Amino acid sequence: MTRTPTLPAPGDAPLTFAPEVSEARAEGRPVVALESTILTHGMPWPDNLACAKAVEEDVRAGGAVPATIAVEGGRIRVGLPPEDLERLARAEGVAKLSRADLAACLVTGGLGATTVAATMIAARLAGIAVFATGGIGGVHRGAADSFDISADLAELAQTPVTVVSAGAKAILDLPKTFELLESLGVPVIAVGQEAIPAFWSRDAGLRAPLRMDDPATIAAAHRMRGRLGLPGGQLVLNPLPSEAEIPRAEMEAHVVAAQAAAEAAGVRGKAVTPFLLSHIRAATQGRAQVANVALVRANARLAAAIAAALAAGPA
Ligand code: PSU
Ligand code: MN
Image (cartoon, rainbow, N blue to C red; front, side):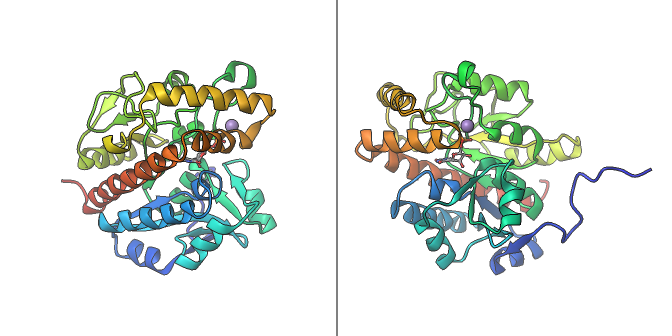
């Protein structure tokens, strides 16, 4: 009887590792995956490069090796040397890759940035258990009509990577997003507080189903899910630092205005999230951007601590 393979044979996936990432893997040292859509579609040049560099430094300061993921020349790149990171940050018209587009971009040899969903797939293939991002995608406002629900949610339900975020982006319908995560059986874990954070703000007005304040506990829960044979990852919610927070009431007005502008302009599909983020960045005179950088950096530091706890093995 043949079994359908759920994991590709070693060496079969088109992965190209940066030297420092392959060394860390070979020695069992902690590695943190980082996405690239936040660079190409989430922030403007040159803030995007400054953010990417700072985030990589935060991972290193936490004792782990950063592996920024992107697709180029028919390969999934796992770790980008500085010149490649800069080229990606400057590039125009880069494809935004989710689960549906990853294979197509690889076979056509195009340049692609990975979303949360595609980065999770790549991280799993590369043997990287922990991934830091800003905010995940989720259920869009008006989804009852548009059916716009990010593929990030389904990915969390099936790919065993622990994703460190500041919540789902507050442009979304947060109650519906967290309801759907519950239906999908994704552990949603708040760190340091009971409340679910709302990306630019620390409190979405919703209570998190789980709370773990210690990176070692989050690492142990990741390991335990593997022992139980459960597919899917964990979503860690790390509220951004207080000094960078923009109050939820203030952000809500910007989100409503951005949403109306997107509808008036007929924006659809993959373009929705980048449109809303860019509208809000302008409406807040860049304060949303400052908060976005602060939250990704905080997530990188926490992810490094979780990866270090995983690498250290069971207590
Ligand atoms: N976090 C940010 N900015 C971003 C994103 C995350 O701070 O731009 C990206 C991630 O790559 C996420 C994507 O997967 O937005 C969600 O896009 P969509 O809603 O189209 O699935
Ligand atoms: Mn969408």
